[in-house]
Length: 304
Image 1 (cartoon, rainbow, N blue to C red):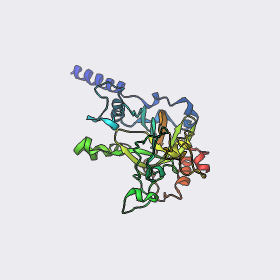
Image 2: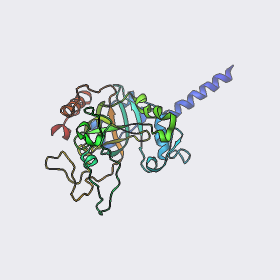
Image 3: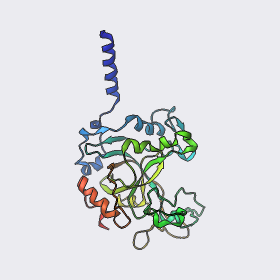
Image 4: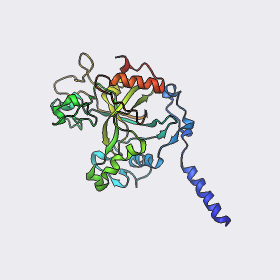
């Protein structure tokens, strides 16, 4: 009877070795001052199997998993290897917040550039293909028409520091599994539209809320205003009051369309969504939330 006990003990030991401890996580040194209030010793990995799906799809776990997510082969614009999420950690903090470190891609959905009708060109004068959408997943108000005809209903990427979470199951790739795949991030984290928190990069931070959804294999994306607040502006030229990225003119695309490759920290609180969040109150509400939950003050977007 001793052998089975030894086998069980060995299996448990192996499982323990394979499950990384949150206390072994080292956040980026440049952000350490802003993370002084975070007790990583009491944090727990949220779901390592899920996190490794991002790593595998990026291509860091071997060729067999590269550009695959939950077994589905990805191609074209959906390949992870050409746009890696670099999810270094995915934790649940003691106070319930979801914490992850990843890349930060630029999301321009809802911006003036997406709905202006301009045929954008690159600096070389050639027509430019963009993936910018008129609409955002979160709407300030319902409308019965086309998103491009109702910019007032969208959350403007130029004005609000928001982030994007995986919500799209992409039926053409995942078939009957699309609903399940599309909900996986929300089911595991409890996060959804309007939930609030902060994003940190180096020694800069910004309050944020969730306002848009993206493909299931992408994690780490935010608005033009978020980049601006992190002192990583991607706008070539703002209008006179700094609320719209208009660019240099002559139909040249207004943005430098590239993101931050890694070491971006997200701390978002499930269920923190506010029923009163509106275009008029959003900035004040997310700034107050960041101060109340994390003691953070002084973000440039809060002082506008």
